Amino acid sequence: MRGISRRQFITVAGVALAGGVASGCGVREIGLGLLPAEAENNDAKGTSPGGDGSGRAGQPVAWETLIVNGLIVDGTGVPAFAGAVAVEKGRIAAVLPAGGGQHRDGGRFFSAGKSYLPPPECQVIDAQGAYVTPGFIDIHTHNEVYLGTNPQAEVRLLQGVTAQVGGNCGDSVDSIAAFRHRLGSLGVNYAQLVGYRNLRRQALGDDANRPATAVEMEGMIGRLEEGLDEGAPGLSIALEYAPQSAVSVDELEQYAQVLARRGKLLTVHLRSEGKRVLEALEEVLAVARRTGVALQYSHVKALFAANWDKYPRILESLDAAVAEGVDVWGDMYVYDFSSWDFGTDRVSIAEDNILQGLAHPRLFIASDSGLYENGRANHPRAYGNFSRVLARYVRDKQALSLETAVAKMSDLPARRFGYTERGRLVAGNKADLLIFSLDAVEDCATRQEPAILAEGMRYVFVNGVKAVDGGAPTGALAGEWL
Image (tube, rainbow, N blue to C red):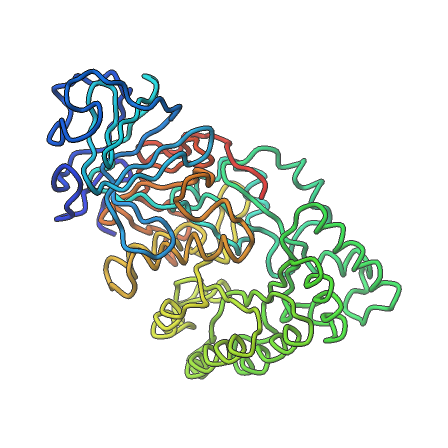
């Protein structure tokens, strides 16, 4: 820990922005049109229509928020660029690169030769010295209990997560519609997978460890279809855990066929993540080959030192499958221990494997976070996974660029799960976005104290609403069901 408070705003040293160099001044909010003209940056005055003192009005716009002077990392992986982002009615109204100059004058905003006139109540955030990025999307969570007691989801928001998917590893809810009604409004966007454990227990009751009959299979497929109708992005299964381990390959393929027909995902925790991880991976790749299902390989890893040398072969297997036309992606977290051994000093995941995974184009970031009543956690990844990517692997180790990291935490998971209106800062998309200085971001949760809030997210917007303001959660419940 560096002892940096969430309420501090530390600039990115030496980053040149439009209108000057990052100077260390904090984020401030003003009402556009209320700022005295002499306080504006008028270096480009006279070069844009309406900026020459002629009094010509700018183009009226209905922007509610305007973020200026930031470095924009748009989620696509392209290099960061200086510019402004406008928000209106929960969506991104405009992304305006600063090429050609940007400035404000008399209530108008000038960018690239054009003049815009927002309403006086439009709030301006000066993001000088900070990055503006899409909100992060965590597609592998176990937060159902937590969201029931903490709908504001501040644990997730303070590491930049604005959308997440629950019901992973086969452990979901019996009825997604009922669960949605019970949860009500949330601070983050949310979706729930159908869980195979739930299907099996509903159909087989206490005798869930035996093979399913044809009638029971029919019932489980019907409940899967029902869950998909209720908005589930797919089916999750943990082949390693009883009673899910009782599933046969034939049964698994029947579910995969339903998912393939409906364009939904099969997310899989393998039968083994240790000694037999390669065989376990081949089992599900074979199902994907035969059925055409879109396969999401959950928390890719090779557990325990005796198996670390298998990790490159895991990645090679993924590459080979993709080359054959198999639709497979994977997700990973960035800690060297799992939830099964976090209470020990054992290192069960190799740092070299983590670095190899971060470099692989088919793997993106997810937390596998377990969060329970009132924020109790069984692993620090619930509180810090996304901040750890930024602080440890982007800033400190420089293992990957910020642009690549943001893509792996926003655009790639959004595309994979079909959330086409999220994950990128482009006009028309939902306004889930972050403002932060990379120097200020810290993951504070540890193995010994896994429930410490992350620091450094200065502003977080969910559907255009401030969920974090000046580093503090607002309590807003602006999330939508995905």
